[in-house]
Amino acid sequence: MGKIKRYIETESDGRKVNLNYFQRKFLDIPYATVSTRQTLDIYLPDGEGPFPVIVSIHGGAFAFGDSRGTDCLSALHGLERDYAVVSVNYRLSGEAIFPADVEDVKAAIRFVRTNAAAFSLNPDKIATWGGSAGGSLSALCATSGDAAEFKNPNSSHIGVSDRVQAAIVWYAPINFLTMDQQFLDIGIMGENHNSADSYESELMGQQITLIPEQVAKHNPETYITPNCPPVFIQHGWDDIIIPRLQSVEFANKLEAVLGSEMVFLELLDNAGHADSQFETPENIEKVLNFLDKHLK
Image (cartoon, rainbow, N blue to C red; front, side, top):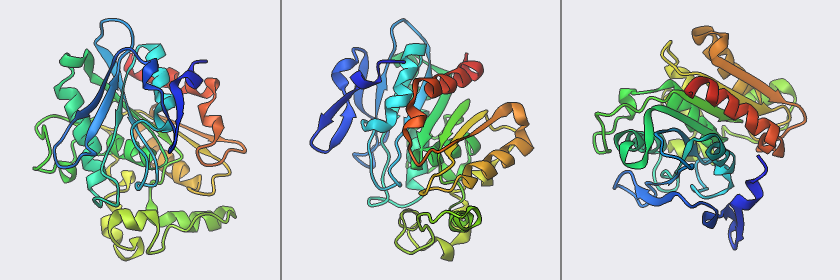
């Protein structure tokens, strides 16, 4: 777990994945044709495969970020455990509002499953991993597998399943409409999410408090069924961007349906949003052990 620094290079717009480090990679693969954002990168470990797959979903408040930012560095440690890593771009809120973000990630999963043989991937062993906005999308992939709401007829490989077999969810917004009250409940002066100019309102195309039924469609809790895969959830206790109760309540609702063996929840002491504690070798090992348990 000591290689992460070599994965990084510094560019004028910030830190990026050092592509020169990876010998087995396929870059800028289009998984759909509506937008130039609909591309993914595939990184393969040594060996012949077929490899179980980690689909890395970047964060950035649904408005920023890309597949080669530092968001995917944690997932890239999966290469050391013989996972393939697929890092996905998706349409951001400045280009297209919900459900474009969800539809894109699911289209990427269907692309991976459809083209698994060509890239030595195991189509039956796919996990999502994301933090913040990426964690929200990872959670949605876990609970809303094959939901008709996200099968846009203009998308690709509609007849292929977009279900995943595990999900990693870090410090994610789950229920947009409860975040501001949760900050009050736990005594944290956190970011405001109910305003008309919040990132969530920009994603939904209108102030979220005015469209609760539409907002519920972006809430992973809406889709929980006994068919959901195992979910690993972590959140920082001192997060001032997304209240920790988002993860607590999501985990409780999952556990009520799936049972305690299928849901892991941990609140990291003294950790903030996207805190370095999530990136430690010990924590990455904990995540990969969870994936090994459920995908291998």
